[in-house]
Image 1 (cartoon, rainbow, N blue to C red):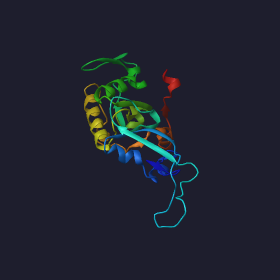
Image 2: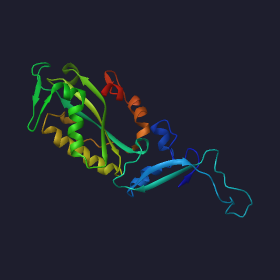
Image 3: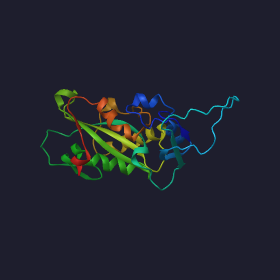
Image 4: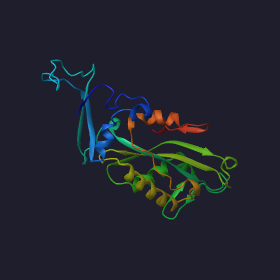
Amino acid sequence: MALVQGQGGYSAESLSEYRDTWTPSFFAAGHGLLLSEVKPFEALYNLSSHRGVDRGFKIGSEPKMFIFRKAGKTSIPERNQLCCRHELHILLPGDEGANDELHTRDQTYSIDDIISGDAVQQIVQSVVPDGIRVQVPVRSILQKDDTGYETAMAVFTIVYCGESRAMKRESADNYRQQVEIEVEKHIALRENRKGRLISKPFPHYLLDSILKENSADGLIMKTKEATN
């Protein structure tokens, strides 16, 4: 599909800018297609008007060719992946430092594993199907004075990305539901934050912008440098 500059949303710098475009990858995902490549479009035919006027179509200064393919085993570039996100609110057990480890029904995780998000990411990734990549890019630690509960709370942003599977909101919300069920097998969740509808799909290249827009005091961003 050939689109003029700005129509495809590929150059959008915010979610609001993206939603003002044709959002082709969003509609393509509804038909099981993935955006595999975006490259400059070069018209190799004579341009003419359908109204019989002898003038060319306006294709702008930087038209783009959007190339889609059926979902399969091959991953598409991270930038092109559609994503959905939600928050997971976990109640941390007991007094901090009272136990070095958390003994769950199926496995033992250290409190540090939970707070860092590593344990959460492992649990979430085990629930979603192949072709969906999980990120836990942000966490916020709330002390019990801020939560209204008797314990501190860890708040995680969970992001599902369509790596080789088309990302649809209804599918992602099903992942969210399954994740909440699975995580609660290990540790308690905040009751009034369960069951909330997941976000609408957005392209991965807007993730940092979205996180910054939704950040608050005390929010800790986990960068690749910090996690490696």
